[in-house]
Length: 343
Image 1: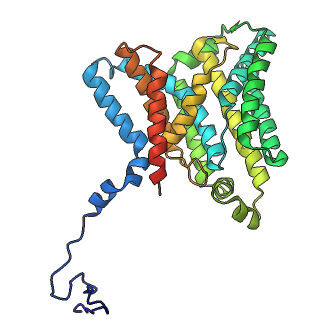
Image 2 (image 1 turned 90 degrees about the vertical axis):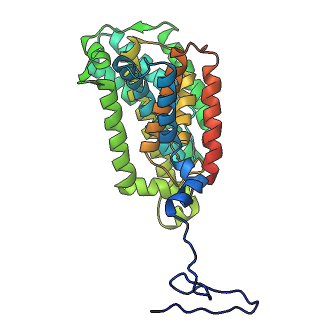
């Protein structure tokens, strides 16, 4: 069928259905891939994987030992804890909140692992104690946020102080050495080149993906973050959703506490504030909307890998550790800037 054309009142020509103008000349269509590349939103969504590839290439050129098998295994093991923390943090951010106590909850959970171990409990019981400690602490925060109607920033920054203080009180400020065959195997063993901590992190990420995108709960989480009023109008209890996501974040922190104990061989009461910054940074780099309503699991996973590769590469290059937080913070600010263009 031939194209039809018309002229508006101001004399402007209009193209017909086949893209031809009044004179029959076809209007060149801009390639779709060019439009995608020119769209800042594309780079915002792909910030973590693209950034990871760039860093890997850059550090490999600067230091050929970067991609050796031993260093790759070390990076993956270091990233495992961060992936677990970032996965839990993703759910809180998806609702428009944030868990600033996640690193302190991990530390407190690790200390409770040490307390149970020091009391002669089996390692399996110690693992349960750590995970349940994180779960209960997250539940307490969620109840205050969801039903107390107190902003999450205030509650979780208070929770950060409470968890850090409890870790010191319970442990007396002293670390508890963990001498266990099981924990040693957890930190050093694996399947092929993939260590057990990495496998645990991947299982957590896979389960979180299913929970977020293939269950009613995940739908409620995204709905509550996108528009709490609309979610409430459709019968979704935003209070329950808030309570649940902080409980989930605490549970992930408790599990991360187990991985931390296995990694360092002790239950340390010292604060791990760097994990907090990196967990939030991983989520931001992963394209999770800080205002809520949009989230994914793969993005924060890549974000955790990117930050781990960044610190590892800087260490190999001999850059002072004092400068590493500066680099991480700069990456986070850049990612937050790009998030303005997300669709």
